[in-house]
Length: 534
Image (tube, rainbow, N blue to C red; front, top):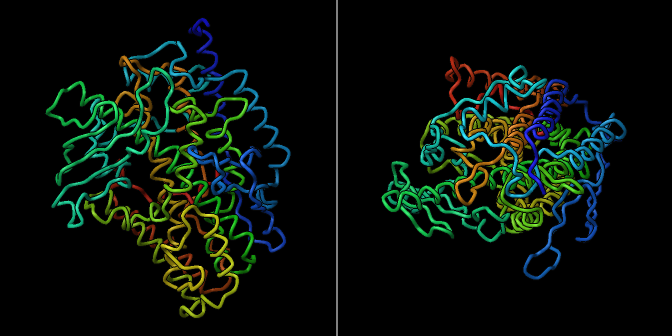
């Protein structure tokens, strides 16, 4: 097949970039209605077989035995109160988008499309962001800016682990703490999945000393290599590590973890067990409403695909079947609820970014504690609430790995319920902000932080890069803000006071943070969303 011409690539880039810009400009924040008992129980969670590959399901299968494993949960239907226009308007638009993705793809899953390439990284960003005719994205959103650790062509893994997106995947090597043994970021489990021809296989482990310097990187293709060894072999190992981190963050932690394991599962459990006037539902409502509707479209487009190539199989290293294997493994053995808890994954790190996460987490944890203590005076009050027990039991069956490492569904405690609610709220606000929108300034520099590692030191072509930039651009569509006053959801004056106090605490954090300009790598309260829904 002849490679696509410059004209063909330009036309596709114009069309899909204009599509992304229109979505950004026209997107409306989802309205937040008061919960209605008659509209809650509208989700079904019947388990389907692996062959029933319906639009709202992801099949999971053990690659070794072929046996069906625990279903990757998505709601069978969009709740009626989220689907005011969805049933006819949005579904039509989505179907048209899928058809266009099939007949007019911006990029395919092959390792190279053969289209034109821009070799200079800065020029690539400017070309994709400001120079697409009829679709200047800069008119709707700020251009990416290099944060610390992302000097051109020289990503600093230590800085990215200490103050950047790799923080949540970093662990102390020794039980005595990082000063004894340093740190480790282990993504070697990704080596089991096949990649497209012409790409280096993923899977890597980086080891750092106590002052955040990389001491070695181990991959299946390079073995263990240190900075003082062969420079070319170390550079290759570093690229494989960074590509592995980008893949894990986008496909598994962000999409499957934050969107599905947390938002989707919590909404399904809450809608099926809690009444519209239940205090726990009123606490969680603002932080999951719209998630099922939003996931119904984005999971299909970005991850599942169909008769068209999904975003992830087009920009990352894995073909579709390998993505599904990775999803199945993550769901059955890779997800941990505490991945969403910064007090857990930041406990070995002392840095501005870690302190920022801990401070914001403290605000959310205090909010959950203050609110629930109004309605539950002790552990007995929680354990004797039949709705709470039903909610936790169903949630434990839905969330991969369950929730027992935070709260026991059989004998729930007030502290456990408080922690669970805080982890959930944080997952859709702080965690989603950190691994979604906040990645904008990191992932657009693909020569510094690659998505794929091509054999022969090749670069991705313009149209594949444009697809990736457009995807991350759309992640920043306007959503309901966390600092918005949603105290009208409160059941009484005490609940209303707690919800208003949350806004005051967030405002106080904001006032104490660097503001002119804002510091890259930190989460600012006024930039956090209420939940994942777009």
